[in-house]
Image 1 (cartoon, one colour):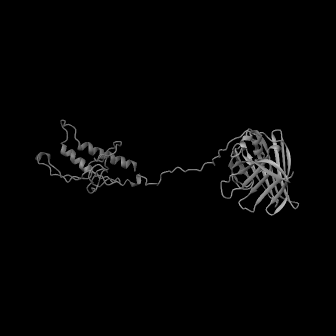
Image 2: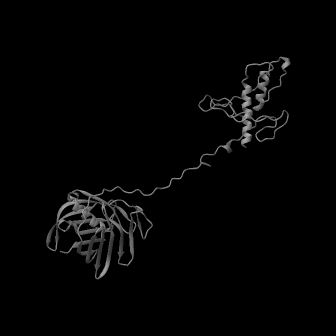
Image 3: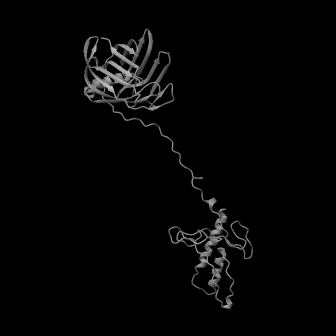
Length: 362
């Protein structure tokens, strides 16, 4: 097909060259003969003229060139064998290597060539791809989730402690215990709740310390059914993965789990008490064990007295600002006399009747 188009292009170019004659030279072909050749090539049949008769050739029915859009008036009806127009409106064939023409009088059965030697109409639709067909469209792959931007705070790790709480879960009450054990560059924390001798919750967090404070490696949530689910903080890979769902989150500096945040907030308050002054906020990314992870922002309510077994304790209350209607609402009371560890923590899930309340036993 390419050879056929190249041949047609060469013939069209010869026609244009013939239509604009060079200055006459001795022995050159008369202009009207050259014009006749050009007209034959573009599909018109001139009336044969005898040069020796001196007769004036009859005017031909010219086929005007098609006019490009916005270049002038609308073009007249198409001729039987049009040539492709140039942007300026004149008939110009595309440049192509010159190929030898067929001998005079010998018909050419090449597709696109008429039996009398004129150019037949060439369908170029197959050479031009239709809109959207055959044109590669770059695919847009979703990138990895973008890590949230949270501040990094100076910290001062609180000393080891074992705190015992009165626990209330919905209509039931029992006891809870928080064990906090920092050892060298690592730590372990465990919160266990029991009602009527049955373990109703068991949270454990293990990890290390870095420039952002606590750096959990693994968080495990064990429910009363005995099932366990875990969040794995893969610091070398820079992500948080889960033992249950195949969800992953980018690991950001200062990221905490559902237990370690209690110790992290105490470490921030110990390093900078002004960080929990009234109306101040603290933000950190917190993950559970079921693929849930979000930024928790706490706003300080300032100094508030808290009564513990008839004794008033001066505390600083912080409250988590929920981002969604069903976010876990958190209220925590920190005791400066106990290294800002929580003496009370109240967590309310999406349902108002699902409340976990821990109040320190004196």
